[in-house]
Image (cartoon, rainbow, N blue to C red; front, side, top):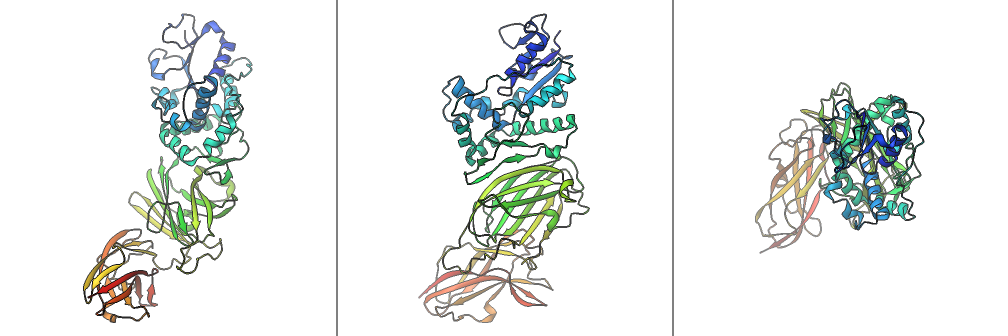
Amino acid sequence: MVELVSVHIPKTAGSSFYNSLVSVYGEPFVYRYDDDKPIPNQCRVVHGHFCANRYINEFTNAKWIAWVRHPVARLLSFYFYKLYTEHAAVGKFEDFIQRQDITNEQAALLTGKNLTDYFFIGVQEFYAVDFHDLSTSLKWPDVKIDRTNVNLNGRYRNEVQRIISSRNVMKELISRNHDDMELYSEVMFLRAKRRKEDISKQYFWVSQNNFFDLDEGTPGKDSQYGDGTFKGQVKKSTITKARIKTVQLLNSRLISSDSFYMGEAMTVSSSVFLLLPMDEVVVGFSIKDEQDCEVYGTNTELLADLSGSNYSSGLLTVDFVVNLNLNYGKYNLTIEVHSPCVGREDITYYDWWEGCKYFEVRKPDPGCGKSFYVGTSLLPAKVIIKNGDKVAYGSNNYFLNNPLVLLRCLLYEPLRVKVGQRIVVPLEIVNLGFDVMDSLSLSNPVFISHIVTNGEDVDTISDEDKISCLQQPVLPNEKVGCEIYVKAPLHPGSYTLAIGVISKSCCYGDEDLTKPIALPLVVSI
């Protein structure tokens, strides 16, 4: 009677495990899966490359076993096994990962049974420890762990290093194998639960030293990643209370970018999926420079009052807006989700993406004035948190006592008009503050101001023509379109149209909420 069913996912130490099964049960009693050969009557173990649903209704009383491996490490191992051991014509790794038959292969082979229905699922990165746990639970005799199919090619580690240093390749690989990444995360969670370990410390370390080794998951030496500029190790926790889904960097025009000028407002837009309702959860990010030194970090707990948040399960979006008071150079960003910071020892990390985004801070364009750089310790920041119908705001109060406004003209420049002509200038306004921007507000009305000057900076329009009302209120973190009407000067020539946003505060008078934009204005007869 079949006692064990072992699903062998390629490159998860399955050959080594098969040898151990033979040592325990004897070769005649271990059937290695073959479509062309029937299972012998004396068989006690079925092992091989087959989908779980192949025997789902046949061996209902058997104990099911499987081994998994981090998708990045597994596909790298699989590729070089094909290339160097089987000498197959697999082409470049970038082309190899496009193959449908290897995409999300782990999830496909385990389809048919819930992960909790397996008697045991081991993790290849912890093979020695997990094998000991399994042999103890099944009361096996002491069995020497056999290492099979180890790649001894001298070029192997150098090639692995080259591939994991490519951000584009790694991003493509992980994106295509989303199901396998989710599967691996679930297995790591179940493993920690089985071993009664702190799941917040269950990390997989991506380094060139453990892509193929059958070790106990000990982190190897530092590896280069990204564009090769930064050194470190990519680690990601696997608890399933909350998972980071997306991270995006937006420039001051709210366009995805990896290049910013000094002092520019950068938005770190992230989404986190909460698998369970949570009383409190903290989302934060940190920035490291080219020397891998952390130069800045903040989180929602530091910027906003999260007491009594009571987040519902589902999507949580968190947008940080930070003025990049950083010197020019290259940086990387880490984002993390964890419990409140009662003390470093008490934090439970739910998810952690280290070095997930790379960006460059560049010098301002010539002629735009000062660089805004006043030291790396002063970065104004604010946060907008959304969960269902709930919205929360917070900031560190540097330069953020008034609404921050982004202003953009939607016309091509320069503007060419006739003398005395009344023209419509379409604009786009983004409210990055915490208050509603409204021209009808009694305490803090907001208006669009404009002025036309000649070459000697002489004002050419009267005061009553300088102010325009917003056509509608602008909510926090909202982008709306609006229009202003401008009357061209009565004399031909070259002028400058400056447009800004002001607040006519009852306490402080007129205050500029954004740096005015200057548009060339050419007036002809």
